[in-house]
Length: 74
Image 1 (tube, helix red, strand yellow):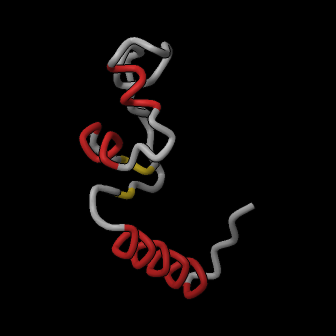
Image 2 (spheres, one colour; image 1 turned 60 degrees about the vertical axis):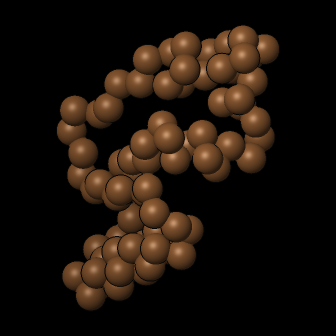
């Protein structure tokens, strides 16, 4: 599960979905006019409120861990 705050999602809004939803031009955008329900059971959790570089660093750490433990993901 990758979590990012609504504020970060609005900042990264490269498709202008959040801006359009806030202005009422489009509907069915999670966090604006649709509720967001976090999953109850999470096997892996990543916080994604930082930079792209920090997120990629986290994914590299996870890949290294999986390789060391010989865990395969399908």
